[in-house]
Image (cartoon, rainbow, N blue to C red; front, side, top):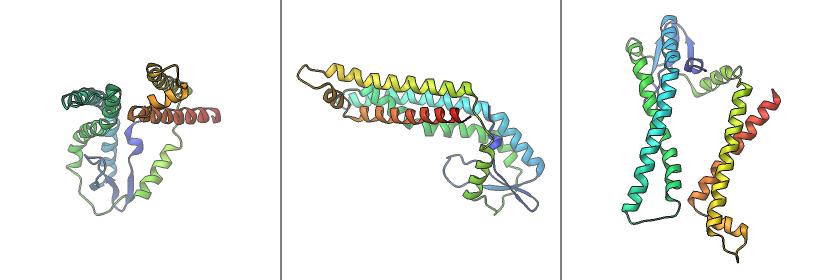
Length: 221
C-alpha cells in the first residue's frame, strides 16, 4: 500500500523545510509551518501510520452516508407526493455522489487528530508552497509508482462487470416498456431518456475510460 507520506511536499528553505498542513475542509487555504529534519520525520511517521485507518474511515463513511442519504431521499420524495419511475436507482446514484465529500472530510479529521500534537509545536511561517511546486513534487513521486498486473486485471474485470450490469439495467427498463408496434431502439431510448438513464451513460463512459486506460497501460508494461 502506498502511504500518504510519499505525497507530502516539504519545501527546503533556510533553517529547515516549509510544510503545508492539511486543511479540514479539503479545498480552502492551508496553514504553513517551518519544520526541522526531526519534525519532518515525525510528520511522515504520523502520516504513514494513518494511511490504513484513514482509508478505512473514508470507505466506511462513504458507504454509511450513501445508505443513509439513499434511504432518506426516497422517503422525502414520497412524502412530497411524487412517485417518479426509477426513484431508488436515481436516489442511490445521487447519494453516492453527494456522500463522497463528507466522507473525505470525516477521514481528514482523523488525520488532523493524529497530526495536531505535532502541529502545535511548529512555528508558522510566511513562506508558501505554490501550486506549481506541489505539481512538480507530485510528478516526481508518481513516476516510480506502478500497479501490479493482478490489480490491473481486477480493475479491468470490475469495469467490465459494472458496464455490463449498467447496460443490462438500461435494457431491462426498455423490455418493461416494449410494445410490438415500437422499434427496439426507440424503446431503449425512451426508457432511458431521463436522469437515471443519463447517470447510467455517465457510469458506462467513466468505467469505459478506466477499462481502456488500464488496458493500454498493461499492454505498455
